[in-house]
Image 1 (cartoon, rainbow, N blue to C red):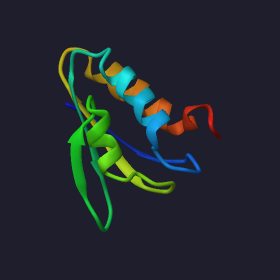
Image 2: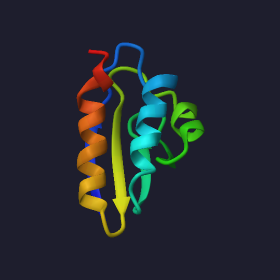
Image 3: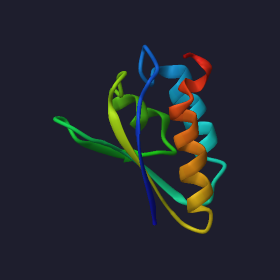
Length: 91
């Protein structure tokens, strides 16, 4: 199992377009992927579900953990954390 903590930097958070981009990237991996929202309103969702990601209301400044378990877990966590850290090209 691999876990990486990142902060959402997009000005509008993970709205539809970045949530879709995250979902598409996550679905390329064989590992099980979860997203955990940290802080006052902790939540957890399936990283391969755009609906779960959007339902967590991941606004700018929200700390999350990306958790992957499976044969390509390291690559999955690093790739998805880079997407979040890079602001999906919006920053």
